[in-house]
Structure formats: C-alpha cells, structure tokens
Length: 267
Length: 322
Image (cartoon, rainbow over all chains, first blue to last red; front, side):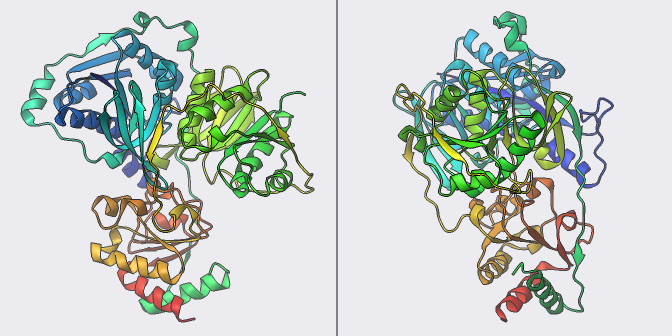
C-alpha cells in the first residue's frame, strides 16, 4: 500500500514562545511574517508524528511505501529529515505562501496524490503549529472524496482494507473504523517521533527531493485562487490587573486569599 | 424570504453554549445591515426559543434528522451544504468544538468558500469581513480578510466575546427546515465510544491546576486536595503531563482541554500562551508562582508570589475552615 504524508515547514514554536514570553517577538516589515533569523525553521511537529505513525505501521509488518510531500517555498531540509526518519520517497512542490492559503495548499496536495498514483492512506498533522488552523487535511479529504478521521493517537490497518483509529476526544478515547483510502490526522498523543541516527541523517543529506510543478497538476485557475488572505499578525497584549496577596507566612497569604475570594463571591 | 446576513450554527450543545455565538453574530449582522438566524442541527436544546430571543436571533431554523445525532461528520456536512445552497448568508458562525474541527473545514472545501478557525474577533471594515484568529498556540494573533463567494465560515473560540442579551427580547419562532440526507451513509463507524471518566474539566466550575512549580510528581496530590476541598476538578499543564505526573486527560491548554470555569487556580504554572488558550475564559484566575515576573500574573485577578507546595495545603485548610 502507499502512504502519503503531507509535511509543512514552520518557525520553531518553542523559539517563538520564548521570544513572546520575553516580549521580544518581532513581526517583519510586511506586518504579518515572523522574520527573526534566530528562530529556526523545522518540520511541523504534528507532521513529524504523522511520519512516525506511518513508520509504526511498517514496523508492525505492513507492506508499504511511504511518501512525504511538502508544498511550500523552501522544504528541502524538512524533506531530508523525513528521509532520515525512513520515508522512501520525498517530494517538493514549490508554492509561494504569499499567494496561497489552505484552499490552494489543499487543492495542490490532493492533486499531487491523485496524479502520482493515488494513496491508500493520507496522513497529516492535526494542525500546523504556525497558523493552528487545521483546515488543509479536510480539504484534501473532500477533494479526493476520502473520509476524514481527525486527532488520532493510534492508527492500525484492518481487513477491508480499512483503518482502525483511536481518536483523542474531550470525553476520552474513541475508536473508529473506516474503509481505505482515508485521510487521518495525527495528534501529539501518538508520542515522540523517532530521532534518526547520525548514519541515516548523513545518508539523507545526499537525497534530493523529487520536484513537482504546480502547473503540472492539472488544476483549474479557481483552485489556485486563495479564499482568505493573511493581512496582519501581531502579538496580543494582556491587560494585567492582578491584586497581589501579601502575608508574613503561607498560612496568612492563604487565609487572606480565601477571604478576598469570599468577599468577591468567587467562593 | 431573503437570506439572513449571518447564521449561527450549533448542534449537540445546550442553549447556553450558543450565547457567545449569538452575541457575536448579532453584532456582525447589524454591521452588515441584516438579520441573524440560529441554525440548530439535530435535537433542539431546551430553552432554545427563549435564548434566541434574549440574544437577538430573528428566528431558529431547525434541521432535524436522526442521522445528525452521531459523531460522524458526513451527515452534518451534507445538511449544512443543503441548507446553504441557493441564496446563502454572508457569514456562518460555529463554536470551535471538537466536532466542528472536522465539519467546518470539510464544509468549506465542499462549498469552495473561505474559512477561518480559532477566531477571537470579527469586524466588518470597508465592505470586507476581517477575522482575527489565534495562532502559534496563542502567542500571536493573525488577521485574515475573507474573500471569494459567500458564505464565509468562521469557527469561534470560547472567549471571543462576553455573552450580552438584547435590551428588549423578542420571541423567536422555530422554523423546520428539511434536508434530504437519505443518501448519506456515514463512512466513519464508531467501534468504541469514548468512556467519560469522572467529571469533565470542560464542565467544571472550579479548576485547580498544577505545573512544574510543584517540584516533584508526589506533590500533584496537593492540587487534587485543594480541588476536592473546593468541589472542583484537578488540572495540569502540559510539561508535567508529558513527564507522567498525572493523566493526559487532566491537561489544560492548546492540545488539552479548553475550559471556562468560574475559578481557575494555577499553581506553579508559568502562564505560557499554549496553556492560557485552555483557561483564559475563566471568570477569575488565581496565580501562585515563585517568580514575580511569571506571565501568569498578567492574566490573574489575584496572585500570590510564593512556593505553591507551601501555599496549596494552607489554602485547602483555609477553605475547609468554614
């Protein structure tokens, strides 16, 4: 079977978080892009977990080829990381983020799957850690007419052929099944993805991704027209108005806090 | 009948969960010079008509079909696509629920229209709908202009606006709307439904949550003891869940539970944006942290600078004292 994983390059969310907490996060001159050179760019962590989910299927004895495709401006390093993890095939589709949105990216990735021999299983991260939108997997599923199963912590293959997926819901784990081909999105509950050995990383450095031109995918002009345009990005300010509870001891602070909460009818 | 300007859509939620959505929808509908309608899929919640009236919906459109009761999104997407065919509204609003994460993007793809998830604000400026959303786990806000054909779809986060009733409520009429779902067979089949264990953080009125400041795994019981004394539920930040100090179902934040309690006590939690996404809708936040510069104090109504390991047992004692 063929498993296709869609991967995206994002600014390191931990670095962004550190800069934001320190109040040093800078938005670029265009008013919407994070341009700090000191923020590394890496693979969206949920996408890395989607690759891990595919590798676990292979480890479990599933005979499969694993293709990782990235649609973006510069995806070379991300794809080499995918190859080092164990992807059989890496594919780069050059797409300018400025003229693109989830609709365009989803249409392009779906068209890639359809024109490259199809897929029995498409795995995606549950969302990208930059925009947190989580829309692209649904667009791929709709355009390919595949069912969508989201926010998985475990994926198994069953006879049919189909997939058995454990989903992380607010009410606890839900186990569902659906026929293949299907789109499944992977959540962080899947666990830490494997880190490739030095030898595998060295090997992968020489690997060159296959490139696919958007023009070769047979998409209509309307498919390449964004529906939403990012116009601005900013760091929200929090209006702090915290009343500090002082006291000579922990007991005194605790008593004063409880008294204040009762006075304000919180308790 | 002309199309409403804005439709607020809910399913499987009590009427109170629609209050934020209707308040926001009413504001945008007024800016667009049109009507707000409330679309309910599946069972009509108790008090729906009264809630619609109080929060300014012109009426309720009700699509009732047993196929809409399940967890699969095929029937919901089909019902919405059918409802929105013809002359669609400009904007359709949804609560950012677990099920909406599938339904809304799939609907957008099916209709080929614009969608924004995780929205915190919507404005109508110069003829354009401009949606602010949370990004980078809450570290930044992104602003999107919605283009292309109507309807535009927006999923709204839990604390986008404070629910506000209208001055003079009118009674809202429920209109039954048909949708032909005869051809829909859900492709995703539930094998084992989720088993809810204990009270849900999402429903809790009081949450006491602990983080790294607890120092060691054994101290999580201090959090549980205060939660029990307050009649609340214990929560946790992601770092201590990742380290196995407590169960993943306790996690509050971006990849955990999105809560909206009356009281949220954050003990030894620094207040990273990823955590605040899960608790910033709390009415009152109390922060206990050793670091006086911790970000959590910016979000808190009350703060104690100190060691939560010493303060939590004292709080439990003080709460029980009466």
